[in-house]
Image 1 (cartoon, rainbow, N blue to C red):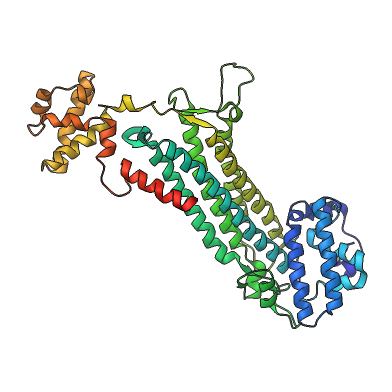
Image 2 (spheres, rainbow, N blue to C red; image 1 turned 120 degrees about the horizontal axis):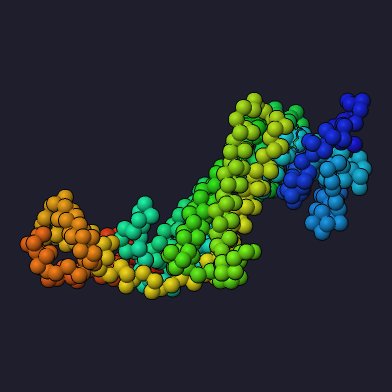
Amino acid sequence: MPTWNSRFKKELDNQALKFSSSIEIDGKLFNEDISGSIAHVKMLVKQKIVSSAEGNKIVKTLESIRKEISSGKLKYNWQNEDIHSFIEEELTKRIGITGKKLHTSRSRNDQVALDERLYVKKEILSLKKIITGLQKVLLKISIKHKGTIIPGYTHLQRAQPVLFAHHLLAYIWMFERDIERLNDCMKRADKSPLGAAALSGTTIPIDRNYSAKLLGMKGIVLNSLDAVSSRDVIIELISICSVIMMNLSRLSEELVLWSSQEFSFAQFDDSFATGSSLMPQKKNPDIAELVRGKTGRVYGSLIGILTIMKSLPLAYNRDMQEDKYHLLEAVNTTKECLQVTAGLLSHTKFNKDRFEKELNGSLLLSTELVDYLVRKNIPFREAHNIVGKLVELTVSKQKKLNEITLADYKKISPKFEKDLYNYLTAKSSIINRTSKGSTSYKEVENQIKFWTKILH
Ligand code: ARG
């Protein structure tokens, strides 16, 4: 029988109980719940609200409940409304009347808000570690492919040659910003709502800062209404997960493209690819596709929780119980996708020689010729026009830029000299880049050095 029901004449209908029970999800927060309770009771002891003998008994019993839930010895089911009630009932079953003191000056409203913040803190650390793991894999491939040239794209049209390492390093930077966002979220998550009680605080002389300190939290959520009714920190974490998934999904999309016969650039290991039940020749990029697909779950969770919260009057409303489904779904999916992407990448071969020859003399080097003319003091717009005419010529003659004769070049602009051909290899276009952060060998090497230092 729930702890709150003495004013009720009937027990909750089974259908209603099953419908409203959240233990299947919040049971996963049992560790956080018990840590919160232990900090709470230690505070009650310090404030002389509970004797130290009683406090010790409660702490010891909570610890054994923690062990038993972890090992699977102690089980719960939907008949237990939520993890908070379950643990308190279990405690009281074991130590009787003393157990009934645990909930002094606390409500499940501040309790659940605390559990969630502790969970958010833990998962921020875990996400950061997993992201770093993926960055390391990306770095390793970058180092291996320092010299591999691929076409860079805009609009998925070939644009200019870039180093494959440069391309992968771009993802390392993107994931680094996700880590920064997580660090930022941590600052706001690291505050304890405990002691806000149901909504208005309490008349019992508690010390909120003390329980926060015991939990290793940097402070308290001061306003008691805010403490029990806000979920913006959770929304923030799910939105960070959404950005991570968006980044992962783009990478997955590229892996799908690169592994296609048309690109013939990436080859997945058999252990990370799947076959077709019908077509014997198929080797499919299912893992990358699933990461791309699971992005939908995380975006769904973001919309889900925003929708739950959007019209809730202060303070607590039961709608908020649904938040944990979205929080756990988003965090678990994101972690799994980050890990599997690292696994997939480290089991993928990239074909070093796939593009370079093809790019030599190709139209992707048109901009090299524009820059060539600019260096000869032709205004950029004019240089652009001149090279535009050249492009037209190569297309009509079905030739590459390095197959056009100097005489033909000179007909289009007298500024062209024999040395122009030096600029028509993929390699030279990489070497000649001088701007900071460009795809030049030197700049890419600098980035590799930078990330090697950061990641090791
Ligand atoms: N299971 C509830 C939740 O997750 C705990 C808080 C219940 N509070 C209440 N006033 N019914 O939101």
